[in-house]
Length: 90
Image (cartoon, rainbow, N blue to C red; front, top):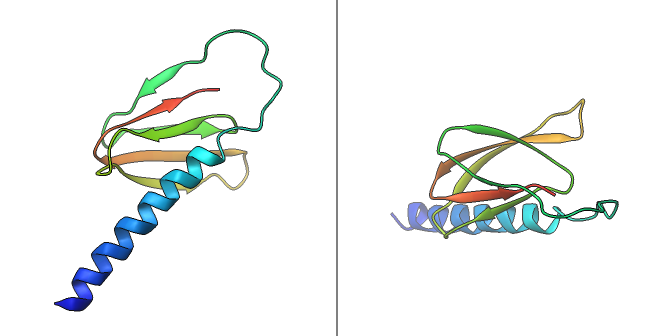
């Protein structure tokens, strides 16, 4: 029982840190001149393609994602599994 409890805590921490990592890695483009960027409200079990400059923003701590790096491209696929989140295109 204790192992299961610890596993759930570590899983939550890893998923939260992964979300923060995605947010931190979202910047770095620097070549954008122009106004606003799009914000996409994510829908559960829908896969979105994100690239450099995009930021995934969880709306609450219950947000969980599946993330898959596309090996031949500079993009990743992100699927919202639970909770709510947005993608800021930039």
